Structures are given as structure tokens and as C-alpha cells.
Amino acid sequence: MIKTELCELLGIEYPIIQGGMAWVADAELAAAVSEAGGLGLIAAANAPPDWVRNEIKKARSLTKKQFGINIMLLSPYTDQVAALAVEEAVPVITTGAGSPAKYMKDWINAGIKVLPVVASCALAKRMQRMGASAVIAEGGESGGHIGELTTMALVPQVVDSIQIPVVAAGGIADGRGVAAALVLGAAGVQVGTRFLVATECTIHENYKKKILAAEDIDTMVTGRRLGHPVRALKNPFMRSFAEKEKDENVTLEELENYGVGGLRKAAREGDMEWGCVMAGQICGLVKKEEPAKDIITSMFEEAEAILKGACGRWIR
Image 1 (tube, rainbow, N blue to C red):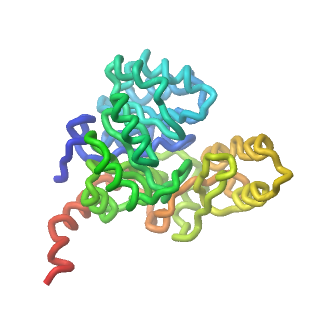
Image 2: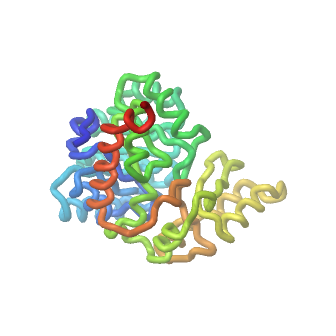
């Protein structure tokens, strides 16, 4: 079995973290992933603190294993959720969409392991200086908020620039992706899109069907004009957003307001036309719904077989 320093750091069986996907990663999915040996995450997203607290309590009723929360730093409730994490003694926090610098000291003093998502070596170095336990180097292949560098380019550079563990994210959906991440020097992986079709994932069935039907070129990126690019599946909403983004008469405020609620509309209401169906470029490899446990075990069995037999495949 593949074991890395990430397993010891987080108290998990497999070096895999479930992505903190807004309006997707709730207590049920987080608990299922943790029960299966990975680290499940509850995504705080733009949800109010009471919702986050309830999900933490629910996850604790579903599993005795370690899980964490993801805090999206653009949320209007970030300050309250950051404090709530300390109150609830959450063991692990991952962050996205910015730098968590203002919260790091309080979290670390509370004994929380902090794993910020980074899209550059500069931010990775800063997070290490501030006491992060590890960083999640996420390439632009991922769904949701993305950076500019690809996973293949970003991960080895981050690995070489810091001394703490690096988790690879973006474009990983099977054992080949896990094996590649480990060869690049990562201590583990974060996976999002593949878990969208976990049996325990509570998103609308329309969303799951859309992911299962998606192919390699079915995503697009919008939001660069806002400074927060987002990858999602192509649909009327995304194409409309892209057209508004090109229109200089549409203000940034109008553009931002146009996108509000789009993800929730897709994930919870099942609107595949005018909702934002966030997914990574790897969705073309996601072809069936299955329990989180089966997803994780199959990924790592495949990765182990690849790593054991890799040289024999290419070298004669």
C-alpha cells in the first residue's frame, strides 16, 4: 500500500484529500471519504456559520475519523467561519481563493493543521513561513477557482521551493494521476471532480449525469476579468457569462452579480442550462457512479501497480 508523510501528518490511510467543492462537499461526502481512508472536507463556501457548524456536527455523527473544512476566502462569512473552526476544534483546514495569512496564527495556535491551496511558488513559500503544515499545489486543470499554471508545471516547482509536504491537485481522477503526482514529488493528491459522482455525494442527479456525459473539451474558463477565473462545463450560462465579460459596457459589479448563485443553482437545483456546473478537465475520465471507498481503493491499487511496473513498460 502507498504510504507517504501526508498519511502520518493527517492520520489517514491513503494520501488523498477530497476537494472542498462549494455546495457539493457536505458532511455526508466528507464522512464517506474519511471512512474510506482519505481526508474528507466540508466546504464552507459562501454558507453562513450556522450551516457550517451543523455540517461539522453531522459529520462527527457519521464518522469518528479525521475530517476537515475548506474555507473559501472570498466568502462574506470568512471571519466568522475562521473563528468557528477554532471553537469547534476542527483538526484540518484547507483554504482557497486567496491567502489565509490573517487567520494563520489563530489556527496554528489552536493546534489546527492548515493546508492552503496555492497556485504559485511565491505563495507556497509564504505559507511555509507562516506555519502551514503542507500546501495544496493546484493546477489550472481543476474545476472551480483556478490559477494559470498547469499541475505538471506547478507541482515540481513548488516541491523544489519548500520543505513542507506538497499535495498535488488538478487533473487527477485515476491511478495514473496519483502515480504521476507522486513521481513529481508530491506527498499525496487532492481530488474533486471524481468525487462528484461518488454514491454519497448529495448533488442533484442532473449534475452527476452531466459529469458522466462530459468529454475532454467540455469545460471553459470565465471570470479572468474579475481576477478570479473559474472552470466549469460549457452551457448557456457559461457562454452568456463569457459574452458579458467581453462587453466593456458591462461593469465588474454587474458581471459579478450575474454569477452569484450559479453553482448552487446547478448543484442543488439541478439547472444544467443556467447553473454553473463546475468540473475539471479530467471529467472525460469519470464514467461511473460508485462509492467513495471504491473510488479511493481503485485509484491507489492502480497507482501502486503503475509505480511497481513503470520501468518495464518503457525500458527494454
